[in-house]
Length: 200
Image (cartoon, one colour):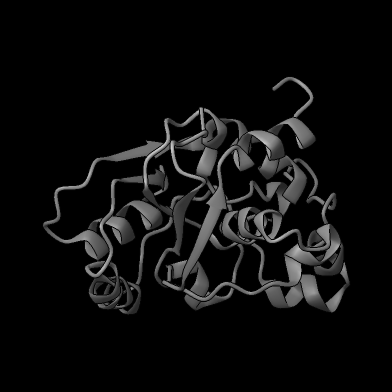
């Protein structure tokens, strides 16, 4: 479905504002944690930059930190928004709730940041791509889309668009409420889905 009439569409990726887990240094994954007051303010501040862009739709993770960020960043703009489980952060299994410092100290974080590395009972970056790419590929084309999501999801999607080394994607830091703009050639999401998703 992602074959627009023109050669490119614009995709803007927005990581959520600071969450309680971010502030306290633990991994949240699928835990539905709220924004901190600082995170709420970060989302309001990004509104000024987004107001300069004509948005046709917003695709949002269904977790509250991404939903709240999108609401604050959009303000009273009348833009169609939809919420998707497929755009959630990586499920971090047995590591959810653990301090990042502990995972760094014993080397588990190094494995977690690789393309296929996963926590016990959790997902890898590859697994995230497998659930996100098909839904993006099937989206009807529009000129400009905003995705409100999470650091892991954004560095995976943007890294694939940029043809980054797969095992280096996990090391690309995405700051809270950082915006990443990409001009995406028509058919790119479908090509990526066909590359990584056997059943697409």
